[in-house]
Length: 406
Image (spheres, helix red, strand yellow):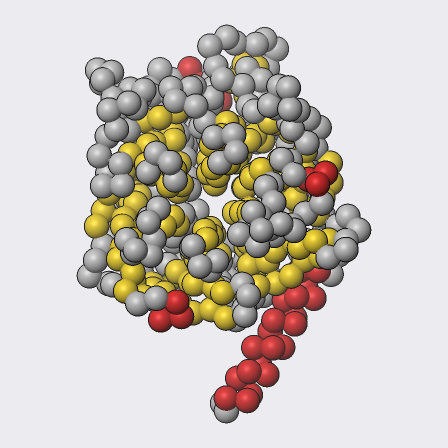
């Protein structure tokens, strides 16, 4: 194929994706969706983060890592790794060293291959990036594992979200509870339930040094029988973590139970907190009896009923860029969250007195594929991933952004 024909093919693929993503989209007046990278570049995208130069680093479930320049909309594959893609496993989270690119390290969360048929091995590893800009690549010999844990392949919910706290310079990781027990009473009453047990890394948010070390101020670092890396527990399927510098909040988008009266949640993560799963759902309601509230658990910072299904996959607080511009003032300091199942993004204002969100309202509706990994870009746009195939590549796979164009 000639260079001209290749460019034409890319243009057609991008136009097709652009039309598909926007076909039924409804946004407030003045907003628009722009596709930054389409299926000709990304397949099964899972997570993204931003480098200081404004480039977006995007993971693909099958093991790819891409660098995308949102300004000129060019992209290239930085590296590829072998990963287990059975079930909901694969390459998930990505985070860059707080001194990147001076310290050229990228952290990735994925599942190792060549494990037994009944077990999986989750791994968070640090890789070194060589080259810069459009020439950046992963050094294939540089991988250093900083955290690993085993799980049951028959179970689901594996987590895999990553966040490097820019002030603490600590690495946060989400781990799903990996449940495979369909018996609700037995599951809730099990004293060794994975999400509640401090001796198990599953169903947790863990916190570590960038070398995998246990911070001395972790809440359970000196608790007998506990995993010292555990920062919070009682999580079911914790997706993406996000840090809001203005408040210091660490937010976690999380899936609740599967019944119609269960809730999906955005949790504000605090050290030592127990968010209740599987003992309670929502605001402390007993998961099994569903008739009484149970004390001793931390309620969600924000929650909404699942009804016919929901999957909260990303949450962020909107802050305008320092250089000015961005969204109108009414959205400054508002919560935005993405729901994969409902193919929507909603917003909620945050009460300045209580620091808690109010009722949410529609913001973006009608996507042809579910949004994931909602991130605030340095340009003041809201970036999100559409993962259209679940679990296979799709013509609706994309990295897109919401921009204000009055």
